[in-house]
Amino acid sequence: MKTKLILLVFIFLSIYIHSQNRIEPNNAIKLELPKKDEIKNYKIINVSIDSLNIFRINGIKIDKNRLETELVRQFLKYKNKKILIKLDKKTLMKNAVYVMDIANRNRIKSSLAVRTK
Image (spheres, rainbow, N blue to C red):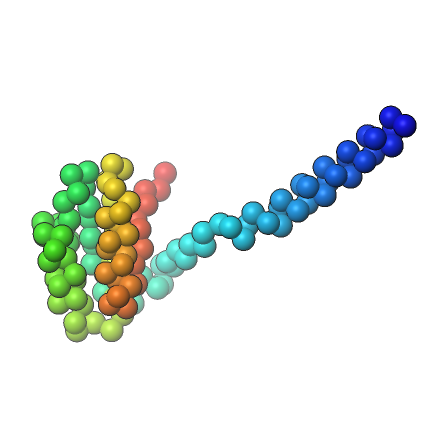
Protein backbone atom coordinates (compact mmCIF):
# COMPACT_ATOMS: atom_id res chain seq x y z
CA MET A 1 0.00 0.00 0.00
CA LYS A 2 2.81 2.37 0.92
CA THR A 3 4.60 1.66 -2.36
CA LYS A 4 1.47 2.41 -4.40
CA LEU A 5 1.02 5.73 -2.63
CA ILE A 6 4.65 6.73 -3.25
CA LEU A 7 4.29 5.74 -6.91
CA LEU A 8 1.10 7.79 -7.23
CA VAL A 9 2.74 10.86 -5.65
CA PHE A 10 5.74 10.45 -7.94
CA ILE A 11 3.49 10.29 -11.03
CA PHE A 12 1.58 13.43 -9.98
CA LEU A 13 4.82 15.24 -9.25
CA SER A 14 6.33 14.33 -12.61
CA ILE A 15 3.16 15.44 -14.43
CA TYR A 16 3.20 18.74 -12.54
CA ILE A 17 6.88 19.42 -13.29
CA HIS A 18 6.45 18.48 -16.93
CA SER A 19 3.40 20.74 -17.38
CA GLN A 20 5.08 23.70 -15.62
CA ASN A 21 7.99 23.64 -18.08
CA ARG A 22 5.55 23.80 -20.98
CA ILE A 23 3.37 26.59 -19.56
CA GLU A 24 5.80 29.19 -18.18
CA PRO A 25 7.77 30.15 -21.34
CA ASN A 26 4.54 31.30 -22.99
CA ASN A 27 4.06 33.88 -20.26
CA ALA A 28 7.51 35.40 -20.68
CA ILE A 29 8.14 38.72 -22.42
CA LYS A 30 9.87 38.25 -25.75
CA LEU A 31 12.72 40.69 -26.23
CA GLU A 32 14.27 41.40 -29.58
CA LEU A 33 17.84 42.49 -29.01
CA PRO A 34 19.56 44.39 -31.81
CA LYS A 35 22.43 42.76 -33.65
CA LYS A 36 25.62 44.67 -34.43
CA ASP A 37 24.96 44.75 -38.17
CA GLU A 38 21.44 46.11 -37.69
CA ILE A 39 22.66 49.07 -35.64
CA LYS A 40 25.03 50.27 -38.38
CA ASN A 41 22.14 50.90 -40.82
CA TYR A 42 20.14 53.17 -38.51
CA LYS A 43 20.14 56.81 -37.52
CA ILE A 44 20.20 56.43 -33.73
CA ILE A 45 19.15 59.13 -31.30
CA ASN A 46 19.85 58.68 -27.60
CA VAL A 47 17.05 59.63 -25.23
CA SER A 48 18.19 59.58 -21.62
CA ILE A 49 16.06 60.01 -18.54
CA ASP A 50 17.79 60.71 -15.24
CA SER A 51 16.67 60.09 -11.66
CA LEU A 52 14.97 63.51 -11.53
CA ASN A 53 12.95 62.53 -14.63
CA ILE A 54 14.72 65.05 -16.84
CA PHE A 55 14.66 64.10 -20.53
CA ARG A 56 17.67 64.61 -22.79
CA ILE A 57 18.08 64.05 -26.52
CA ASN A 58 21.73 63.32 -27.32
CA GLY A 59 22.71 65.03 -24.06
CA ILE A 60 20.62 68.19 -24.58
CA LYS A 61 17.93 68.82 -21.96
CA ILE A 62 14.41 68.95 -23.39
CA ASP A 63 10.96 69.46 -21.93
CA LYS A 64 8.79 66.33 -21.85
CA ASN A 65 6.03 68.14 -23.78
CA ARG A 66 8.41 68.93 -26.67
CA LEU A 67 10.00 65.47 -26.82
CA GLU A 68 7.81 64.00 -29.56
CA THR A 69 8.04 67.07 -31.80
CA GLU A 70 11.81 67.18 -31.50
CA LEU A 71 12.25 63.46 -32.17
CA VAL A 72 10.06 63.57 -35.27
CA ARG A 73 11.92 66.67 -36.51
CA GLN A 74 15.31 64.98 -36.11
CA PHE A 75 14.17 61.83 -37.92
CA LEU A 76 12.44 63.50 -40.90
CA LYS A 77 15.16 62.81 -43.44
CA TYR A 78 16.03 59.26 -42.34
CA LYS A 79 14.27 56.10 -43.48
CA ASN A 80 15.81 53.75 -40.87
CA LYS A 81 15.53 55.30 -37.45
CA LYS A 82 15.95 54.11 -33.90
CA ILE A 83 15.68 55.57 -30.41
CA LEU A 84 18.04 54.24 -27.77
CA ILE A 85 16.48 54.84 -24.36
CA LYS A 86 18.93 55.14 -21.47
CA LEU A 87 17.54 55.13 -17.95
CA ASP A 88 18.90 55.90 -14.53
CA LYS A 89 18.28 53.18 -11.93
CA LYS A 90 15.78 55.41 -10.10
CA THR A 91 13.86 56.49 -13.22
CA LEU A 92 10.17 55.70 -13.24
CA MET A 93 9.29 53.06 -15.82
CA LYS A 94 6.30 55.11 -16.96
CA ASN A 95 8.74 57.62 -18.50
CA ALA A 96 10.41 54.89 -20.54
CA VAL A 97 6.98 53.69 -21.66
CA TYR A 98 6.13 57.29 -22.62
CA VAL A 99 9.15 57.41 -24.96
CA MET A 100 8.34 53.95 -26.37
CA ASP A 101 4.78 55.10 -27.04
CA ILE A 102 6.09 58.12 -28.97
CA ALA A 103 8.33 55.81 -30.99
CA ASN A 104 5.47 53.42 -31.72
CA ARG A 105 3.11 56.20 -32.87
CA ASN A 106 5.73 57.55 -35.26
CA ARG A 107 6.94 54.14 -36.51
CA ILE A 108 10.37 54.54 -34.97
CA LYS A 109 12.13 51.50 -33.55
CA SER A 110 13.20 51.77 -29.95
CA SER A 111 15.25 49.81 -27.46
CA LEU A 112 16.28 50.12 -23.84
CA ALA A 113 19.98 50.38 -23.15
CA VAL A 114 21.36 48.06 -20.51
CA ARG A 115 24.70 47.90 -18.80
CA THR A 116 26.80 44.86 -19.48
CA LYS A 117 29.09 43.38 -16.87
